[in-house]
Amino acid sequence: MKISFIGSGNLAWHLAQKLEKSDHQILEVYSRTLPNALALCEKLYQARAITHLNLSDSKAGLFIFSLSDDILPQIIEQIDLPENCMAVHTSGSQPLNVFSGLKNKKIKTGVFYPLQTFSKNKKVNISNIPFCIEASDRETHKVLSEVAASLSQKVFSIDSRQRKQLHIAAVFACNFVNFLWWAAQDILNKEKLPFHLLYPLIEETYKKMMETGPEAAQTGPARRKDLKMISQHLDELSKQPDYQKIYHLLSRLILEKYK
Amino acid sequence: MKISFIGSGNLAWHLAQKLEKSDHQILEVYSRTLPNALALCEKLYQARAITHLNLSDSKAGLFIFSLSDDILPQIIEQIDLPENCMAVHTSGSQPLNVFSGLKNKKIKTGVFYPLQTFSKNKKVNISNIPFCIEASDRETHKVLSEVAASLSQKVFSIDSRQRKQLHIAAVFACNFVNFLWWAAQDILNKEKLPFHLLYPLIEETYKKMMETGPEAAQTGPARRKDLKMISQHLDELSKQPDYQKIYHLLSRLILEKYK
Image (tube, rainbow over all chains, first blue to last red; front, side, top):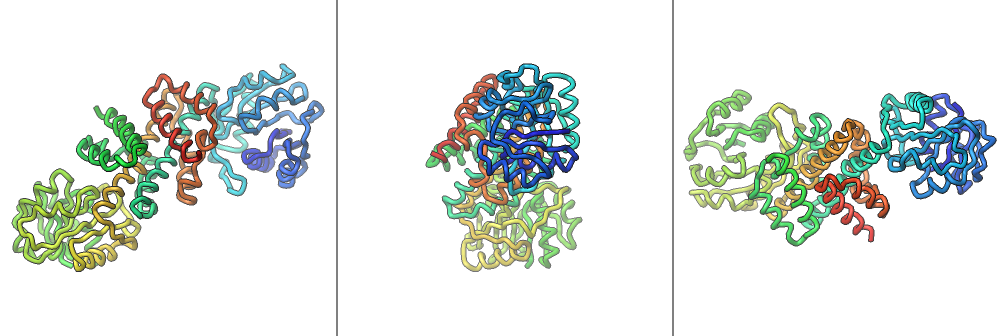
């Protein structure tokens, strides 16, 4: 497949190289800042770095928009694409119909969303990453599924509404989880205790959840309905009212699970 | 060292066997229910299962109370121990002075708290577990530190006040973290999406935090100060008011970190 990238960020960086290794051909890499586009092209066989959006003569059949959510709509409005190509984005939070802003209404559109975080200087095992596919039509869906399957064993059809909930679930399971680790570190540091004291327990918690799922893995004072200990802990947290609020809310919700 | 166990639960189960492997001698295992004490004694060389608390003739120098928090105080009041022995408990939430209930006030006391969860049928790598030590006197502290060091490379002096905060931090980093995974599963299942979609992202989140610490690993809409997306997500969660509360509280606290 002949593919061009609109955007040269972390995700484009990994995806373009992996696609080439899977025998796809990267023709163009667009970035507003030429050095960024050039840096990625240096990693590729024959891709051209471009800073303009007139791509109506491009030979690519698939355009992958890998841009931040705030820029995506305006780039879609500005770009000129060839007839009969496919335009897809890689965003977890943008709906498929963000492409309704395209000048050429005949272009087929889709979403090609790999559910993972990417950093340029960190290797990723792409074959393990779930690819979430959505498309304006059956043919595009088939093409995107095949491209995803050439990279990963895990390909899922996920519509825009599901993708939004998936993104929210990821915020809970990753961003908020990380923040609770941060809060735990903060609580320990106030007592001059090192956070690494908790590493073995955190590791075990993670492994147990992956083995049994979160419901069976739930433990702790609220799970045991140990109201006395919960109330002691809330007292102890009286000087840290924000952490007290977290403790109160999450303990209440766990208690309600076992009513 | 000659050691007896008061209690035969999950922790006693692992600890007694590991102590024997480290050349300590287990003399008695007390349980209110004989079969429980017998089951553990079968795993040991020469320990006797007992159901009474008159241990004043015991040859043990160290008594490890490994009991649930609600039973510990009453067993301490009932037990008879030999002169000049040491009595320690393994609880993260009980203070050292829970032993003030002992009949014989001359007995030296301590806390011997391994910071890990234990299940009988699951192997543990005890050498990696942090042991938190507290003692009524310098000599007991030295003995407990040596016993802990015979099991693990990680031995820490932690007083009762610190241990309480450590326990609260563990609730955040483990129990509450697991509940957020459960919430994420719930959000996905409502959209008929499987939770395992998030496994690679959860794994990466865990690994990144362990590599860089939670502050550097923080990502997500609140980290990026993406108020538009936060407000969209809160709207999406309007039918799940409890999850909306979690989202609101944790996003606010993350935003405040980057003010």
